[in-house]
Amino acid sequence: MAQSSLADKVVLVTSTMYDLNKASDRTRSVIALESIAEAYRRGYEMIIYDSDSPRHLLQMFSEAGARVTSSTSKTMGGKRREAIADALKTEKPVIAYFEPEKTSYVPEIEKTAIPILAGEADATRSLLERQMQQSQEGAV
Image (tube, helix red, strand yellow):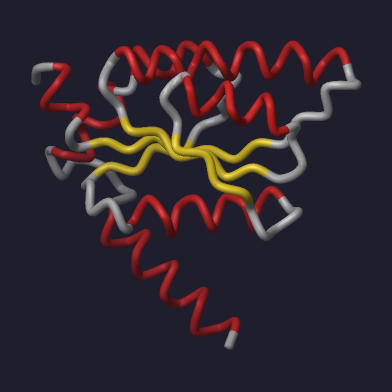
């Protein structure tokens, strides 16, 4: 499958929170920026839900090609659910949630995307949609 046609079927999703007063978060944010730039170079749409990272860093993420949204949740799980719910709206058949510091994942996305598109994966979009619906119904 050509990279451009694969990119049309995949949305990359992540959640972030960086405290640039910490050396480890400064390093992680630089690595995340590399992942965002690589995803953009390869034509992938990328959605980031963030809470409490500095605005200038989020601007850098946006300029590198990500769609950055402020999360209403302070928990990783809450941000993840918000990001996935947003990704479902794209109607792309593959939603790939990943940690942005895992730069090696972006060039390897086809290893997970192609089996999903071929119907050979255990977890599919329809399963995710059912789980999200059940989660929302349980929260009411």
